[in-house]
Image (tube, helix red, strand yellow):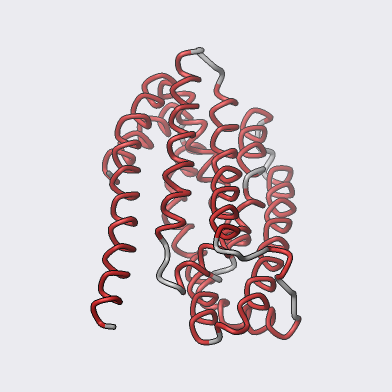
Length: 259
C-alpha cells in the first residue's frame, strides 16, 4: 500500500513539474516574442489591462481553492454537493466581477481603448468557475489530468499567439486569445472529469454548504485581496503616473525576473 501511494504521488508530482517547466519555456520563448512584436507601448497597454482586471478577479475566486479541497478530502461522499455549491458561488462571483469592473471603468473615466482591452480579457473570467473540477482532482491526488488539460491549453495558446505575430495582428486579438485560454482550459478539465465517469449535471447547490464555504474562505479572500493589490498596483500606478510605454518596459523586465 505504501509503495502504491508513493507511485501515485510521484506520478502526480511529475506531471505538475512537467507542466510548470514547459509553461516557463513557453513564456520565455512565446512571451518574449509577443513583447518584442507589440513593442513597449502596446505591450504596456496589455500588461496594464491584465493588472487592472487582476484587482477584481479575487471576487470570482472567493478564496475557495484550499477550502473546497479540504471539504472534498474530509467529506468525499458530499462531492456533488460541495462542487455544485462552489461552482454556483464562483459563477456569482464572476458576475460580481463584471459589475464592479464596469462601475470602476465609468467611475475612474478609463479611456475607451483601455476599457475595450479590459472588457475582452474579462470575458474569460466566468469560465474560471470550472476550476472547481481542479479542486476535485487535487483532493484525489490526480492533478495529472488537469496538468494535461493545461498543457493542451498552453499549446493552443502559444500557436495562436505565434500566428497573430505572423499575421501582424492588432493588439485586441492578443487579448482575445488570453480570454480564450480560460475557455480552452475549462473545456479540457470538463472532458477530463467526464472521462472519469462523472457528470456536471449531478452537482447540486445547497444553501447551508455555500454559506459554510463562504465563511471558511473569507479570511483567505481578504488575504488574497491584499496580495493581488500589492502585486498589481505597480503597473497601474506607472500607467497613471507615467504612460503605457513605461508600463511596457516594466512589464517586460518583470516577466524576465519572474522566470
